[in-house]
Image 1 (cartoon, rainbow, N blue to C red):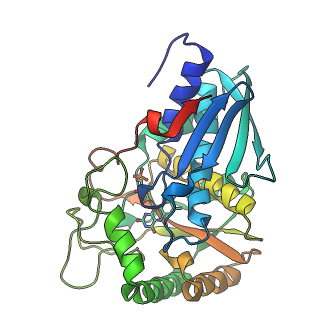
Image 2 (tube, rainbow, N blue to C red; image 1 turned 60 degrees about the horizontal axis):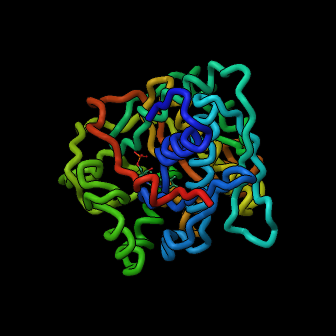
Length: 325
Ligand SMILES: Cc1cc2nc3c(=O)[nH]c(=O)nc-3n(C[C@H](O)[C@H](O)[C@H](O)COP(=O)(O)O)c2cc1C
């Protein structure tokens, strides 16, 4: 995906392809990009919302925020320094950002490392080793730069997050619309959704990772050792579309920083989808010192304990998400 001395439109199209490597809820990729004489415009694609899992579109906008951060990291690599205006048109809430460009003077070495991490980041649903405290400190800083708070949870809080996870699973279990959506988005080989080879295989007894969304069984094997992942929660002090976009950018930043530190990562949102479990997460982060009332995304981080995941999740082709007008 590299281009030497290509015209600007081609560089922008290439940067959009890199942006699309961002994580999204169930790999739904709910974004679309339009380029015109005023710059590049990022929209949430309302045809790709998960009506039951994400009725307010909160996670779709978080996903778009992750794509926006990936884009901001990719553009300088192709010589373009972005300026971003978030929610530029009050009359059109689906327009999340306008991006204009200058020439890059100096490439920030940190951003260069994050650009390399885009290619290596994966959502890994297997157990991890405990990461070092130093690494966790770096991740906390990455979240703050994007206007979100990341609360790291200690061992006591872990039990509470496990309780939130069980609460969410119990409520989802008897929700046919949620289950239908989950089946639609998982276990297939398409250019979206989560393929079977990245979903944990069925096991006798409790799952290898206690704090995880329950997906249909896949073929991903893991050893039976206890998950020692560190747990962080990204929260905001209000719960608006603007907060969700910022959380997505913070999520992308934290995941790419973690990848650059050779940590494995997995975002988790089943615990913030259902009011009863979101309240448990809110109370837990408050006890852990979070000043913010709205937990948005939990993240597991850790040293990898297994061989790297094979391949990448697929993405829709750039023609499906990007157009020039
Ligand atoms: C808003 C959001 C919510 C997510 N929620 C979960 C989740 O609850 N459980 C999970 O295993 N992965 C979750 N993911 C990860 C996606 O499934 C993953 O990004 C997608 O399948 C693409 O795979 P990749 O991250 O390896 O590129 C979430 C990602 C985002 C951005």
